Image (cartoon, rainbow, N blue to C red; front, side, top):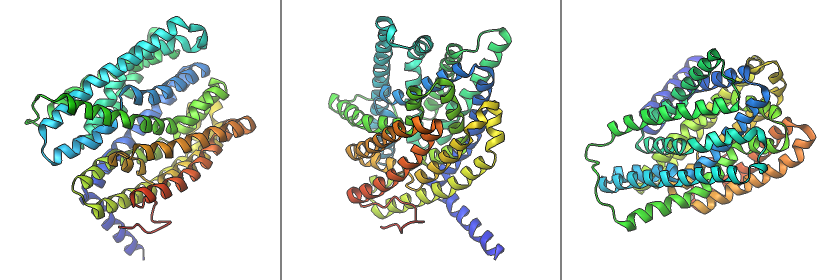
Length: 448
C-alpha cells in the first residue's frame, strides 16, 4: 500500500514537471519559499530592533503602499499578463514593444502625480495626520515612483514567464539589502525608527529596480525593436489597463484589509502583533502567490488559442495544486507557531490564536485557486470588482463588530467568515458568467 502511494505521488510529480504551467509554479514557489524565510527574518529583525510602536507604524504604512501601489501602476502590472503572452504567441512584436513603452511612460506619470499629491497634502494639511506618521509618509511619497516602476517591471517579467526574474529581486534581494542597511544603521548609532527603516526600504528598492530592469532588458526578444505606435493603440492599452485598476486595487485591498482596518481600530503595537501572525504564514501565502504568478499567463495562452477545454484543465490543475500544497504549509506553520512568534519577541506569542484562525482562512481561500486571474485575462473587470467589493464590505462589517469584542483575535475570526462567504460568491458567480468551475475537486468535479 505504501509503495502504491509513493508511486502515485511520483507520477503526479512527474506530470507536474512536464506541464509548463505547473513547472513555472514550482519554480516560483521554490523562490518564494526561500523568500518566506528571508522575509520572515527581516520582520523578526525589525520587530527585535525597533520600538513596538515604530514597528507598528512601519507595518501599517508599508501595507498601505502595497494597496496604493496598484493605483500608481495604473493597472499595467495586471494587463501585462493579458497582453504580453498574447502578442508573444501571435508574434506581434511591434505591439509588444509598443505596449512596454506605453506602460513605462504611464507608470512614471501616474506614480509621479500621486507622489506630488501626497507631498502637497502633507504640506498643506499636516494637522490631519498623526505626528507619528507624518515623516514616514513623506519618505514613502518620495520613493513611490520607484516602487511603482518596480511593480511594473515585475509584471512584465511575469507576463513573459520569467518567474525567477519576477520574484528574486523583490522578495530575496530587497530584504537582504534592507537587513544589511539596518545592521549598518545599528552599528553607526542611527535611530531605528519608522523613518529610518522606510528610507532604507526606498533605497533598497532603487537598487532592486536597476538590477531587475537591466536583467529584463537583456532578456527581451532581439526582434522586439522599438517601432511607431498609433495613438489609438496607446489609448487602447491605457484604457484596458486603467479599467483593470479598480478591480485589482480592490483585490489588493482585500488581501491587506484586516491590517488596514486594525490601523484605525487598535494601537500600532497591537497591529504589529497581528501582522507578526500574518507574516508567520508567509509559506502558505507564497504557495498561493506562486500559482497566481503563473496562472494568468497560462490562462491567457489558452484563451489566445481558443482552447476552452484546455483552459478548464489548467484551472482545475492550478486550483487543486494550490489547495493541497496550502494545507501542509499551514499545518507546518501552526506546529512551529509558538517558537516562531517568540522570535519576534515575547509579547508576540499572544498572537497565536490569530495565527490559527488566519491559517484556516488561507486554506479556505486556496479552495478557489486563481479565480481572480481568470477574470483578469478574460477582461471581466466588473465581475471581479463586484466579487471583491462584496468581500471587502463583509470584512469591514465583520471587523467593526468583532474587533471591539475580541481585539485582534476578532479580526482573524472576521477573515475566516469573509473567506467562507467569498468561496460561495466566487464559485457561483464565476461559473454563472464564464462557465468555468474554479472550486477545488474536493467539493465538486470540474466541468469541461
